[in-house]
Image (cartoon, rainbow, N blue to C red; front, side, top):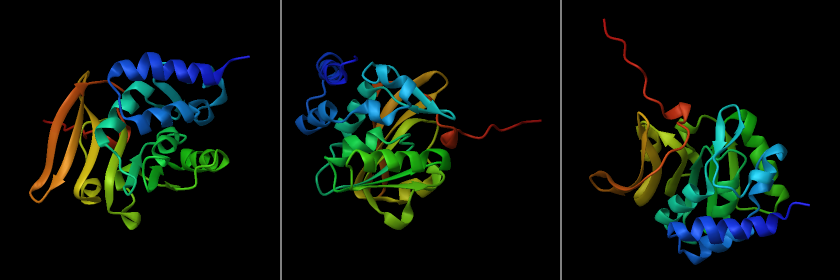
Length: 216
């Protein structure tokens, strides 16, 4: 029988810690949250590998290594309200549950209900998953201290940035051609201040692709 607990510990010790993830609360969440509960059953045995996994209809669960690095950069505090975009079946929300005050997630219709069901079944009660277009965010529940975009983007639309509090943090993988860069933005009085942190690649989210311009 597959030992998920041992696999999860091996992931933290051999994949996450060597990536210079040192936040103790985050490491504890990574040791406790069962990623296998937030994936299709046929992918359960791959839950604690470094692989980005396809959930359904083009949505993926990004590598735990990459997700951990992004969450550490966000430095989520207990009083923070978080907006999660493209959460899939809810693994990232489950991780953030113990770090934040409240998490709101937006997913498309075929994923949102499944994510909420899995989160409730596994005891996470400070998370709301709403059905909708991730590009619209969740203005009604905002503004937010933290916004996580779980996937690669070519741009971020202004409607999302408006939902971030002054001093709030937003993170995403910005992709240009085949190159990806993890960027953290902080909202200031003059706009978003972006910093590059490390190279990374993951699937480009359809909702954050630039429209192709046709020239005659």
